[in-house]
Image (cartoon, rainbow, N blue to C red; front, side, top):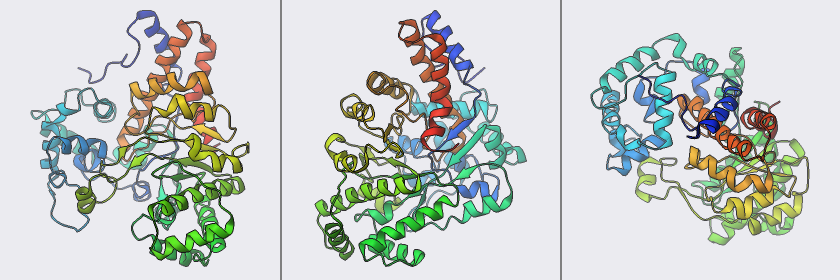
Length: 469
């Protein structure tokens, strides 16, 4: 018995299904380009076995544990670490049983499809996960993880990953990327420059972080010129470890283009710790424009991920810290917010700024028209909450007529869950092929062109947008 339907996500109508299947067959085995994610580079540096099934599938994956938490399971019972080092469940089998007993909660969600794909195609399991099969699953996966062909590098190669980008903060020493490089392993794992901790005045420890940025670079980060030069130095350091992109997770898409004198005064204000919410927002906005200018100089692709109301639960943030499933989408405007940056550099064809959103209402109204006009802009794929069949379908329907396929950036999986990478890319390939089949059937695209577009969406556009050639 298979856990996954071989024709999943394809149209029901027979002719359309056959066409979608044909398009998919042409891209299903293409290499995976994973240009933006949150896998731990330490996995590939040390190449140690994954400890156990719970630490592979449950504890690091907020897609998984947030659903269980929503049904009343405490994070501590799932082994999610506490910021104060307090007690949490440490028995991985107990965590796994909690997960298995409640696996039905994921029915109909992308997580269920990703997990079943991983269970079947990575570990060879063919029975549904449940309370009754929990221990069988655990023992089977744990036995697999003890084998050399299930270590991180072996799975990387088996998954067909051509390149994988991780994401590190501006203050990271990149020791694990150095270890990967010095190991001689041929797998391509690159870093991405994420400066949120040193550009967001609301980030905990901001002033101390900026001081540390100065210490790392030998620049005086209390001055505007020194602060910008420190960023340039860190970007160059990241580039020495393969970085081709930066990533910016701001609350909004607001940008500014202030005179240098005003920007320096604003820097002094936010470093003092005495600033208003409007001043913090203005500083973040100014730094998006400055990062775009730096990208023009060093060629790094810029990614903007606005619209997440991060750490929405104050108690969860206090107990467990960031990235624990409580980043919630909110309305996000782009037309007015991006105008200062676009006035400054938006018409530069050598600049690539990839826009992401958690606000689907902006796709057709704002994002597609912007990307369909400014040569610097590309639309990132649906991500978190929308990296699903319906999310990808809505994205294509709302954006293609205005900005086409070639002002988009392919697909990225944006995950900490390593075994879900091939599953997520498979969903994207199937979803896009289903959409393209509809265009062919309604006379809007030739079958030959559809095959070319499927290849581009799967492989070429991501490599191009992220300058990974």
